[in-house]
Image (tube, rainbow, N blue to C red; front, side, top):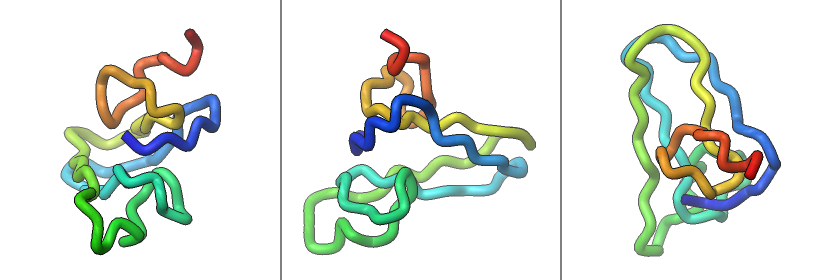
Length: 76
């Protein structure tokens, strides 16, 4: 997982079946979302599709055990 270590999760409001692409290379200028900066590398973005309407909490520290979702690891 790309590490931005902002000390808290990124929050995104999504609708059921919306898909976002989360950066895995760490080079994006729009964390945590992929902006194509991985081009030419071995990295590719992680696709996440919402299972229901509501907020999703995307890891902002890179330490989660529940990639790409925040599991509170930034608090440890």
